[in-house]
Length: 225
Image (cartoon, rainbow, N blue to C red; front, side):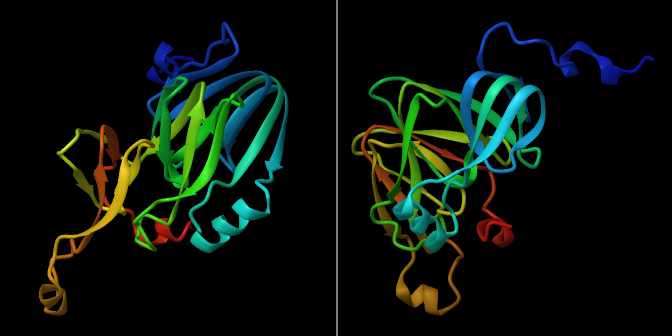
């Protein structure tokens, strides 16, 4: 049988070592000899002896997720084999987190991560109940984190005395060392007259970077559908 479908860039090969690698722009492969964590429902294929188990987060974090609808619902994958993760054909990226690093990510953009990473759901200070959500998942430690983004991401450096303002429906994540606050770029009078559609943004101050998607989140996505 012959076809471009069987070109080398589409073929899955045996992993040389355990860990997370990029399969292609839309998927991540994880070679397991132990365990990893991923968003529930992210597995698209696997081979080997693997088990998939719903991962509890504790009462406090579960309540936060229930309130916001934007938490991080996880599953643990355990055993020996290979598993492929993807989410709705979104672009996938692997972030190497090193000691001293911290990345605050919207739960809907998390795909999978190493068990060596620690994470917690934290309040996004100053964001209130803005469209981007009140809580984000903050990752730290040492290991790899797989994230997804609808479209090609825009990564914007943030420098001291040069804050960056982002739409709360477009933001994917940012350096956890940055300070956040809600910013109004529109007067009350203008809002009463119908507004520009860009009334409130998330302001980020400090030194680091922010990642945004090239579109605002659709209402059904924001609702977790």
